[in-house]
Length: 232
Image (cartoon, rainbow, N blue to C red; front, side, top):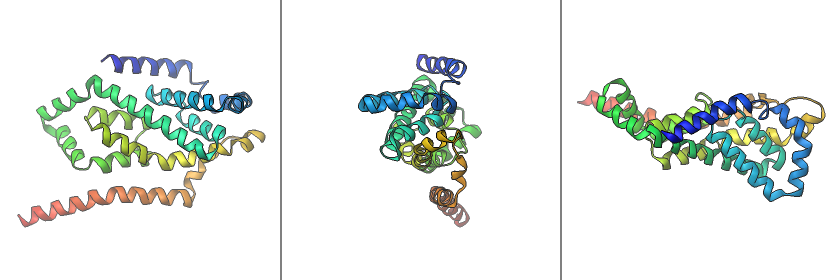
């Protein structure tokens, strides 16, 4: 339980003491210093940024969205989106491993031994792991930190978790990094980032298409299973 307790302690302390430091307002205040540091020490800036992003995600600290915007602001859409994806995926994997080491495997075994509704839910998830994990990432229905913890508690394989995380967060990371890359003009006029871009058709419909692709295999398997039961 030590890894889980450490994560919880840091998450609580971070929520109390770092909320103001990991905000859009803080980014606006320090933007000149950040740009100067990037220009003077580009490689170090990349390493520090990715490490900070990993820490934010791994410890479930507030500010993941601001971190993604910062990646776009400092490094542009490319390679900024790559740095954002690296930080998000590595942080998610570390949180997943810590949670699974704490109680994931034991909890999954206990669920299977006790049976009941939760065990049936776990069995249904096992039949659609790839699709469900992908949908948890590509849609905003499940908060990002919960999408890291739930698979660990159900003892999902690390490979499936890592692959679906890396692929599923790409659309959102691209959009937020793009918004971040335009923050220079936003700061110049004293405004705030416009997240309404997610509602634009050229952003919304591709995401809807990805969701449909994720749901389709599960629907087909469900229809086949129902048809098989009718034949029996």
